[in-house]
Image (cartoon, rainbow, N blue to C red):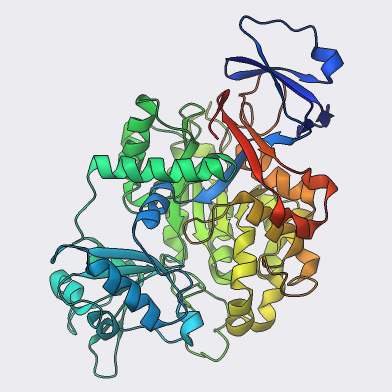
Length: 531
């Protein structure tokens, strides 16, 4: 389709031409950007003219960190997000069990023990909902699994089952498994849950894609952990079938590093629909289950510094091996000790990067989340050229847990302004399904440091706020750069792909608190309106 968009407030992210009122699109590419007078003479075959009635037009928004297929499945499964009590979560499971054949697995997502008083739930509480179905509910953080007794029996998890490396089977006072599995211990049950069929994977992925388009997204960086190769194949099939409506930058799990190397795959390989990002590593756990790896213990827990998934030497080994084969590294790090260990690993590995074959593209290593930082480490992001892939919505959703478990260390948690001031590149995302994939919610959190209801007054550590321009950049050019796609995406300028997000209001001209009232009017991906 050839299209002339007029009467728009175009925010280009192109410093040479920051604003415009019209865009000419030829097929799936931007042909010209400027005033209506400047491009009025453009004539293309079958060209259509569309008046946008003063709408605000941005480069297509890109979420730099989420779990695409998991989000689709989360939309289909039992929703226990923000369930106010264990009893309410069990009620929702009981309701699903009433219409599920006996013996079939019931899965769900979103429970938070923090709003239940801080205590982990138990298998017995799920047993009260159903004993005819194995049940597995993943925590909102994604780092804990709550299961019933039948699920434990099927998985063969007993009092004699040892904790796996990097994980913990939570036990009761008698030493019996309580029904909660942390970090790598989740795999003890996950491995006995039947895998979805290819058709089910495609259905879940397309469901998520449509919902994300409606929210204003045109691209995502997908962070699937275990099963990452399987989901990559799903995304390939949808790409080949021309059913994709989101551009995907895919991170591949470190567990498959040898296979990826053997295939000769390198970071940046692919096209604008499906591109390889880097190798995904988990350095630690998460704040919710208090498994993030910390320098000092959690407040009130003198023996708990979280869980390290790998020792520092292993991290260096992984990063070095990836670099030698042209693969950048994307590492999940929540706690300040984890972030320090990852920065150390990147610094040490880069000393050996001369061993990599010549001609490889410069690698773009990332730290995902970068939630708790020691002040000595903040400037190292900029010094090392490490991308800080952060999720503003985590700051506002987690702030009360941070105050409770990290205390004064919260001053350097979600330190977006400090990172930017220290020279770091920011790429913004959501971590969906952990939090909403709505990019406007993320932008609102970044510029206000408040929840949707306006709490806390003045913002949580407001000195860490971003400007609206910086937040938009993080969801456009910042994310495009992190995904090796800045030459095709991230700004509105001639020659780039026609990905656009059209909003009801100019984000740069309204009060920050009004961002939550802005509506998505249209979304264009590859020259076609998807909403």
